[in-house]
Length: 430
Ligand SMILES: *Cc1c(COP(=O)(O)O)cnc(C)c1O
Image 1 (spheres, rainbow, N blue to C red):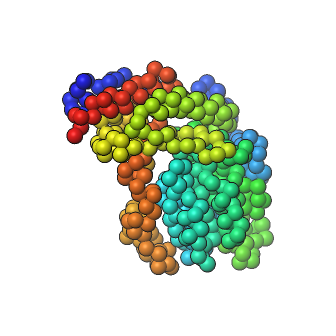
Image 2 (cartoon, rainbow, N blue to C red):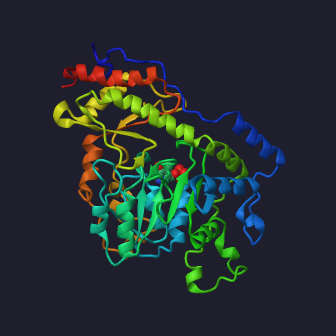
Image 3 (tube, rainbow, N blue to C red):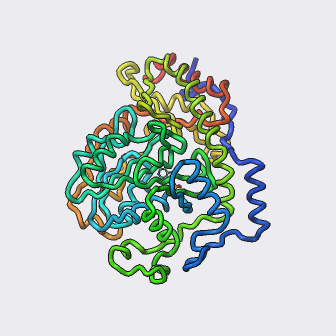
């Protein structure tokens, strides 16, 4: 059978179903807010509305209750949330923060915004999160915090990370944009560090178009995030803040979520459990079949953890396949259709994830605000810095999202069939 990449017929032409979780309840919520005329009631001065309007505050109470945390603070994106979190924990110019290179760029730019120096630690071969052993090897007298990213939908190794943080007096920020509803020893991801950040962007498990939520049990961190979210500098004197420690990092932004987004997010939160569980069910269905293929390895799930699969990772078994992953995966992609609602007609199947961050021009050229803050440090960012990450990215890792709710068993059978077709006809690729 001629492969599609060589001009043969595609295994499937009909697009995969859309992932659309927005329904009547969200519609009603939006209309309720629209009809009230109060699309946002924030005020950037000392007033009860400094903390946002009814919808914003209701969402925050529901989120805190759901995840079992003392404070949930809504913001207009997880990027804003990460920025506020780094500001709140008091990162100052020249401080080092250890972060994974295998994450969305904002996990690291949040550090730069406060003049901090991102120090990239390598990732775990099986779980793809920051590797505690590598973290430990990067600690210096300047290290102030660890940015742990729960990548692909699984919590980082918090037992080891917390132990390291305790020993070296470091704060932990948890970027859990990809892992809402994931659990670690029965506790929700996002609540495992000193401060956690969720995303509500369009691509995530649940969304409000754009949005983010910061969670913490620490009253002072929570208050600082609320200040940074809403023009801190203009309310500090009214609040009696004047000593240097209190003023530090209190340059405010406008990271405020609108009432419409908050109303949508409240409804979406009620769907999170079912949506996460459906992803897990779909992954189990796929894995049962993919496990039979000798050129794939299914990565394990961390012990005592529940993965929620923002992305489903697979490992390509080079020795067995004796063909490079990219060549093989280009052929698989050619057999499959795009997913509806992705206008770039992307097949949601790919090799690797994002290029290790330290290889971006930002780090290679060390230009941010001019040369600041890189000029405060003699750290260099070089190819080879995180060898496990590079090997996974360039040779071994396969990522896909063809397990999102809405995919039927027949749809997933086509995904498996595409792998099988390419495997059986791999002679065509050499
Ligand atoms: C999506 C994502 C973000 C940023 O989320 P936004 O809400 O789009 O700002 C940050 N970190 C990770 C790991 C993400 O996947």
